[in-house]
Length: 340
Image (tube, rainbow, N blue to C red; front, side, top):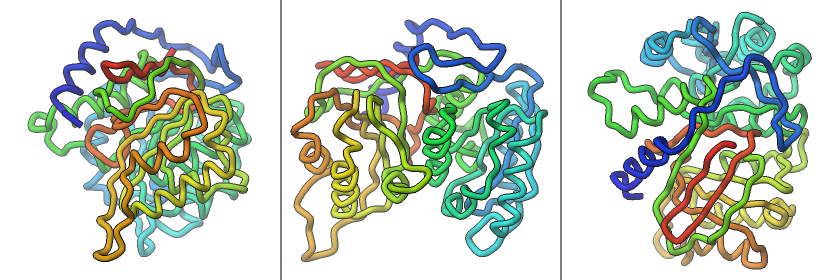
């Protein structure tokens, strides 16, 4: 993606998008059954926990300082600094920490400190009874896709797909513009500003304009949740996918799974974010690009498709509100996605 083009497009889009008024209480999305948690105000508390991989207290400090500069208080969970091999503590420790944050009425949003692996090990033991009565924003991506899908499937509650604590720059003054914009998009999502992002034209895009509920996340996570209590329902929705560290044949296999399970059949629109692909082994070249793989699976369907979108395991990974209504427009000049 041409970063200069993207940034100029983003700034231009931001100037034409009106501020979206913060909501005082949990509301119903006008065009869906998803509940939108209350947006944050000055003085609200954001909890930080690590339900997947481990992270140190030192590593979360830049995010703590930044969120405090936004006017929020921060509560650091017991899992920060804990380690059980690759995990941020044992399953029981991660479960307990996350459950306490779900139930604590003083915590208005929960930011997952990092991804990695581990949320699927505790998701079925979490009790969402209190959370359902008073939903709060849960923030994260990658392995946290487990939770985005689980909330969508079982409770119809919106959540924020975005960077996490391990992506906040340690020196804000020296950070690149794209780092600053992506981190600020988390704040904007939390306080209820209307979100709007653009991507440059791609010859593989499919032109069209639609609106619908946005769902998605990490492709490999979405695939592995198939048939489970967290299986993502994509019918009538705008789906976005991204992934990292996968071979092209693995991406092909996963997308065949989505196609064969009809997850690609009844979409309103499709957004393809960043895909960091492992190079083919010598002599085992797959022979297709990401564009080839995707277009093959959706050849019989007719909906807009936007490639190279700024979401995924990359610096230009902007906050998206899963479960909120969005408008996707793909044209001859590029793509735009905005909340409505």
